[in-house]
Length: 158
Image 1 (cartoon, rainbow, N blue to C red):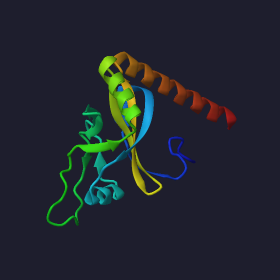
Image 2: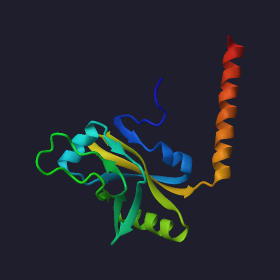
Image 3: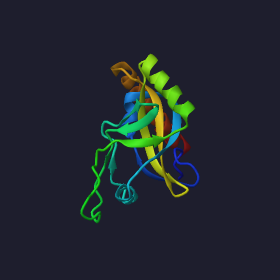
């Protein structure tokens, strides 16, 4: 069975499952990342944690903040800082659009998933609006209803 979130030619490193639960995504973007060599090797081992990750804007640049990439074991004398800010590679018009949306409407830009695409590390970011408690409860109810419906259909076919 194939994963519907996976696209051809991409190898998933990690996904931020908590973001889908806490935010309603309005728009998604693909961004490159400026990384050190030891960070890349650590990512190849899948040692990343999105924790409280978000994107902040400064001087018409986008920065990934709060994402923990574990130090690479064989990095040598000077390993990278696991929680350092990493610059995102986006077009200027994308940065301006995201920055304006995040500032005016009270929206947040959150990392969704990290993956390799044609040998390069890419980050999918989303412009999201925070869900309140009632929205999350509605999502849980709908998921339970879909699960029950699938079970009943499976029982009916057998």
